[in-house]
Figure 1 (tube, rainbow, N blue to C red):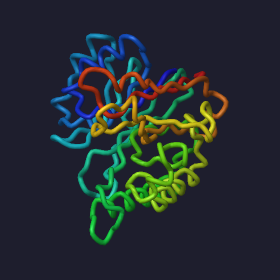
Figure 2 (spheres, rainbow, N blue to C red):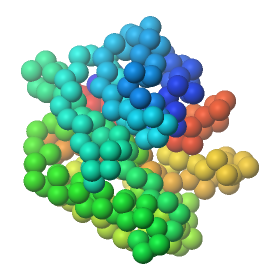
Figure 3 (cartoon, rainbow, N blue to C red):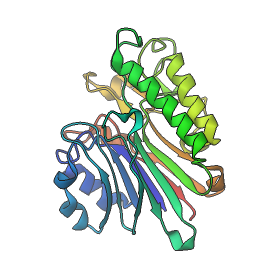
Figure 4 (cartoon, one colour):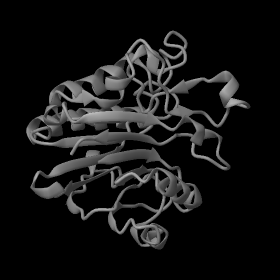
Amino acid sequence: MKITTWNINSVRLRIPLVVDFLKQHAPDVLCLQETKCRNAEFPYADFRAIGYEHFAINGQKGYHGVAIVSKHPLELLDIRDFCETGDARHVSVGLPNGGTPITIHNFYVPAGGDEPDVTINPKFAHKLGFLDEMKEWVTRERITDGRVVLVGDLNIAPLEQDVWSHKALLQTVSHTPVEVQKLGAVFDAGRWIDAMRRFVPEQEKLYTWWSYRASDWTKSDRGRRLDHVWTSQALSTELLEMNVLREARSWQRPSDHVPVTVALAV
């Protein structure tokens, strides 16, 4: 089973890119973030036309939004409103998988604004509160019991080699010590496995996002790993391969994030 996560930065604007990706790479399940449309406006017909007929959508007008699209039947399990803000940032599904069900959680963690100071930046305070609530949720509901995958744009690059310069970005939102610590607490609470780093050692650079502000992103290569795939311990022996589709950042009118795909032997 192949599962792809991709912050698409408007699914309706970039549906031609999504369709081309699905035709070429054909993951079983596609998890999208920042869909930026209400449920009724989601481009269902484009997906159905190429064999993706099963959906779990948590949409919102103009902002945020997460979606899971699948070739296989899905059971909607939960849509949680973290921090009770009304933002569409989570959806989870179950895949029957022949009697050994797999749960997939799709997240879009708040970006946190520009200033890493909760006293002047409520967006940063929201991000830290969201992570605290995630940790409590993982612990309280024993989220990692069973065969579980958590994917999404977590908006934090936790490791030194997840950013182009650890020293330069220590005071930049997405790589500050407090964010890294809080994401680490979520990770430790579930004894998660970092599926991407299972295939790329921690001492090697690994990015999934490159800013639109770079005049030549390939030349500067100032990336960050903001997109993640975690699995529960029950899937630790099922991980087969991982791919970051770096070339997608050069497609016409691309997202600033690229697709990340993990294959499981299930």
